[in-house]
Amino acid sequence: MLIASVVLYLLVTIAIGLWAAMRVKNSKDYVVAGRSLPLYMNTATVFATWFGAESVLSVSVEFSKSGLGGIIADPFGSSVCLVIVALCFARAFYRMDLLTIGDFYRNRYGHAMELGTSVIIATSYLGWTAAQLTALGLVFSTLTNGAISLPTGIIISGVVVLAYTIWGGMWSVAMTDLFQSVMIIVGLGVIAWFVGDMAGGPDRIIAAAVAEGKFEFWPKGGAREWLAFTTAFLTLAIGSIPQQDIFQRVTSAKNERTAIAGSLLGGVVYFCFVFVPIYIVCAGLLIDPSLGQLLSAADARETQRILPAFILGHTPMWIQVLFFGALLSAILSTASGVIRPLYPNMSDRQFLLTLRVVLVSFTCAALVFALRSKQTMYDMVQNAYTVTLVAALVPLAAGIFWKRANNTGAILSAVFGLVAWLIAAFIAADAAVPPTLVGLGFSVAGMLLGSIVPSAAPQAHRHSTPR
Image (cartoon, rainbow, N blue to C red; front, side):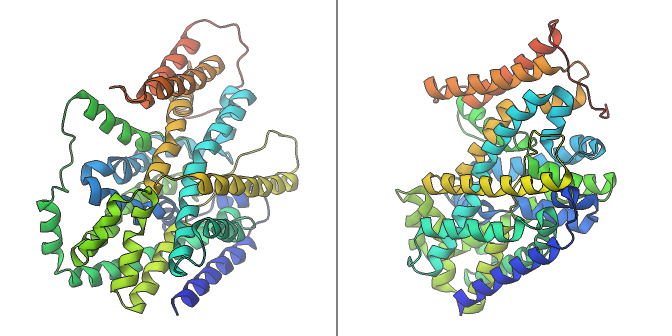
């Protein structure tokens, strides 16, 4: 019954994606849904994209292990990111009228920066996508009691995700995200009410969390602990801004006002609702304390089985169906980004075909990453955005808000930040100042040095952006 329900849900999701594909006539439809999404759909895509597998399976476990302070990156940093995008970047993104974030780097700095940042962004996005594929593989493995191994499940998950995104692009994502957002909110909401009642009610669950110190937020210790805390926050709060998924959702809105409101509402809804799976896990550990043994599992990925194991072992079939439906919604709502190829003279038909080829190639790379990684989804997502924080953020922000930013400064910023981060991570990973902050500092220095110091290098044509 449960497996049949999951298969049916997957078929319905794929059917919605393929139906949405009929609206795709050109690359603009494929990448940004024709810039026509109303507020409710735009908000749904923002929320559903952010509310991924790590929000259900991994953030909740991190809270159980380390409390509020242990989840400073997500949901605190990730939610603030969407607020920053809404207030500072959404208007500029929308007015550019571009298809991909790589187009911005090309128009502002030239083809070299487009190529470099496209590779950087794609590399970072592998971690995010791999986390979703790992989660879906975990679902298949759990539902079949190990008959489908985790690696096999990850491969199957890649095929499923491709099935509903490759043809419909952003239209498929928008339609399925709307459906999946409803499934997430309704499904997890009902489960939280049911499980909370089993555990003795909200008062008992919250009191137990307080007694265990789970609501301690600020770091204890000196400068080292505070710097680590700040770095974790900044990694998602600003490191995830230069990403195709955010750019794509902002520019898919029907107008500028919707782009701003959709990002802001999506961030608020995400922050409020991400505590629902945390509440469910806290309740589950009260009902079955033996599940807490998974928190110290040698394989970090095993800790993420706490919630599925509790649902399968302690709830009736209808709750299991709701849970795995909501979980699949959270996983599948993560859409793949696209990178504009460096062939500006190709026809729209050729461009659309190339985008789909890139999507297939990217999914294959994400599969390899997921199969080889032993990290939790929470760690995979944090690591994913470190590279964009140190190499892509400063050129993006400076290119929009600083008139003197130029090609030389952008290249030095990306190179200095990336190299400094890698060197610091290799020779002083445990230093008081985290390698990520070192990389960010050098990225800022590279932009200032290249843009302020006179240079004879030719400058690329500047795309008109609001100042």
